[in-house]
Image 1: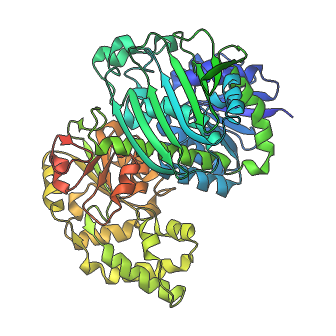
Image 2 (image 1 turned 90 degrees about the horizontal axis):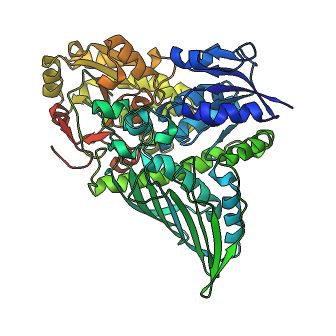
Length: 581
């Protein structure tokens, strides 16, 4: 059976990897390509009589394809894949599968609701030398330690473009090269979970023109303009699993080395296995892969086959039809992605806590043209009112048992009906919850500093909006009661967009109403859903830590910055963990 494919995105990966590989593979037939950029569509050189060239995935006729290969910039992976999965279309998603644990949750929900299969991840595990390493690792006994390194001599991708801007890429070398390395080690760890993670990052090369990946053919326009990147070019981490395996990880886009070197070493109770090779397409390669087994002081070379660069992608495509046909595939990619993104989030969080020297950790920014606020926990202190309203609604609809408010509070930022669905509670709780929220609204107050901050932003000409998990009428009524409704240009509720947070719809709608581009706006939120919504919309995501919130969870979600009091928004310097500025 031939699988009909739509390739979404016509950037470097699609042009250089997926379209050529799919065109040559007998199991696949490309039926459509999709890209919103007219120039990208015009440059597509495939047989247009056989392949539809579309501007949006919504233009795909129902039932016209069996699989979507999504090869778009990182910040769009989840936003593009979720609607496709929800319609029941199988999706293959490039690494990084997601930029946060919140995005992993969204992908899992979409896969479940649509009944489709998400296939995802790095092709590195399909290399013949990596497969040989995995086989050799079975002979080293109980694994004690793993070393993972991919160190490029020079290879900053898309220098000055989306790859080096955290708002669009989600991170730097760790999210890019590190994802490949973690995907390779995951099969060796079984069901082990992460216990401890410590890490650091640096950015010594990312804005050096001489260190760009010229072999990709990316223009260096950004660097020529002086518009440098704000992600790390090197990350180092030390991870410890719950069963005592230690993992050292290094991912570097550039270094002082002469060659690009990928090294994977597995130390076990009965020996060690070491692979030295070069992942990827760089010309600064080792001449060949070397694999060895060491035991009791004796190092024994193990033969590995040489293969053309990129063969792993063909092998990955060979396996996709098998995975699509296997019912056990559903949920597997998400399970693996959760482990990988947790490791990456925790390395970044550790780096932030230590104030590592990287432009992504202490960002100097001009004042934004627009600020989009979440409502509860950011502008207003409504936590105890929500607790009482939830308790009453639960007792009325469910019964006299203890209401699970702690679990409910972990989902704040989302639309109430969505939270009920996630928790498996009756949708009928919404009516008494809303009734009690209105009744108790007089007890809701503005947080200290909010009023002065909002007024100052308006005086500076900043456009202001509220994008809340509440319904629009409830939000506007509450702000009116507090006497601040007129300070905001727009107030949007979750019932007024197609998809509530963590989808980007509410933020995108706010931007449209305000007439502001994503790069000129920030969003302030106190939940992972807020940050995910902002990031998916291409907006700077800032975590507010002055309300009732889980600080550690927010930091793991990789906000662009954190603020500990509203007034810090008025400063030109936002620092992700330091207290005041």
